[in-house]
Length: 134
Length: 134
Image (cartoon, rainbow over all chains, first blue to last red; front, top):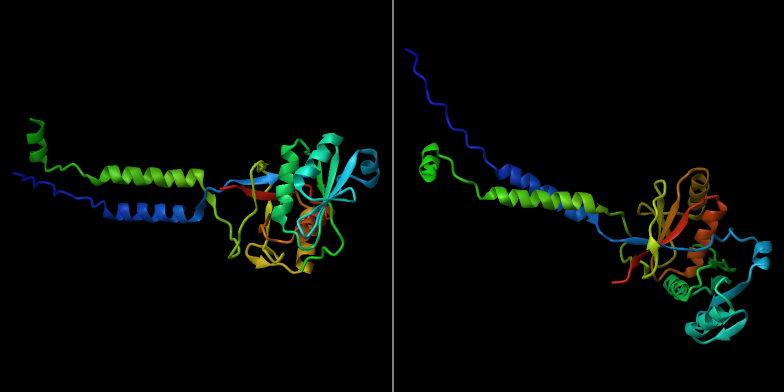
């Protein structure tokens, strides 16, 4: 007569699984980012040759260190005024944007944003003398 | 009757299973929705804008970071002018694009010079990227 021993009960511990899952969660929380990087639409600097610029309507807008703007050689106090002039000249205008040495890039981006909001989307950044990188 | 059967078989419903399910769902959410954080210099405050367009996918864009002093780094390593020139000319012969993530306080002339150098090296897709305003 064969006696059947009852099969021993196996208790599966879930603790290591929980540990691993928590470690995975912490890992992904630390290495993930949800920041939404966006791009600024610009005309490439080499995209418009001198001849093309001469053919197209173009204006130059220069950002001065003291917070003022120079629009086609004339000093303008506020960005709003410069944008209003540019809009009155037409929205097909190519705006060549340059800045002086101490101007921060955030101010240039704000200016581009204001121009784009006003419908002036053809913006080209222009290098200025003294713009050597450290 | 069911309760009696449960008691006899020795099965106890485990209260940790819903917890594991939720944590696994969180892990999946982080894996799918998040992107891996790229190294940023300390004290980095990214450019902010509202109206910029979503980033377009390019072939593994090379991310160049510029700090507030205008120093360019790649993968957390500062690049000298010579290193940067050879990097850009190498990228110009490939299909890679370049994303410039500049500190908001970086001198605009340095950013513009970097963009111009990248374009002169033959890189077709050069973008300034920003984050949305908080």
